[in-house]
Length: 366
Ligand code: MG
Image 1 (cartoon, rainbow, N blue to C red):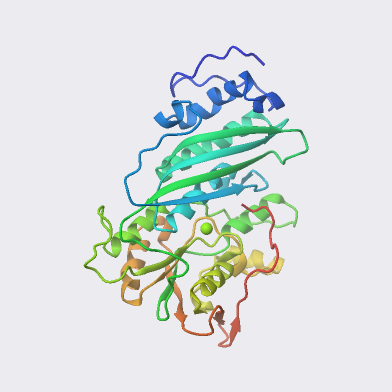
Image 2 (image 1 turned 30 degrees about the vertical axis):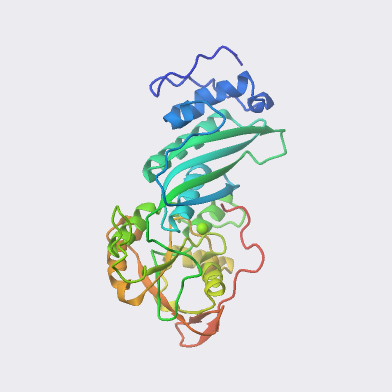
């Protein structure tokens, strides 16, 4: 490979990629090859003043107040699957975790672990997908890192992302804040991400049309906050206690595991109603075939909210106004007992305990 690549000078002139080019150990050396890779692939996708400054860290201007920070490593296999890829996942996964605190995501960092021999074209496609997702979510990638490991020491590529967002004044959302009487809301149907990734592996002979639901949820959260009175200045002190108590994206372990975590954090019980929980027929069919329960399958574009009952209807209406929340429904309620437990009232009328996921149901789905 040539070492005389010119400096990146603007979005309009990314350098062409030689056909069939592969990642070599030198791309992670910190020397000229690393420099070339960054100039050809990363800077054209993510150019912004903080990144282009080219320093060891990004200098960011943040107003005063609380900041939400989250980090997540992404190891999904395969790298591409119906509805998404590891790049979209790496942006949305972290954006969504920041949003689950009521934070408005602003900045991302990304660390890439590349395997020697990876096709550079695959990396380019992943970066293009990250760029599109970052634009969709309104975040800037302000710092990054690339390392290369020997052939066989990684599976193509892994991506770690860290996100930073601003929490409006007066907004307090935490898994510890659920209260008896609260309503449990769900933004849409369950299980699409896990089933889509599993089908893409082709291991189980599963043929399905299910696409992953991966999506940034920060716009949905912003609409929910606005529905209860949060403005650019935050949540007015004159209003009652902040009514959105908990937000969570039910990713690994699914809805059941997320609700168990919240039940323990808040020391309350949660009652779910099976008939209210939306599951698409093709997901239900795949789960039945494989012996899975949709309550435990990962989602990447859904959130659950635990809210004060008097605001539940207004929040639901705001959610349904957006495509990412159009399937929003109330699926349960918070009880004072049994503390730390989730109960499901089944369609047959019986009640059973829904435990957390034990062990790993589907490895490497995110
Ligand atoms: Mg999460």
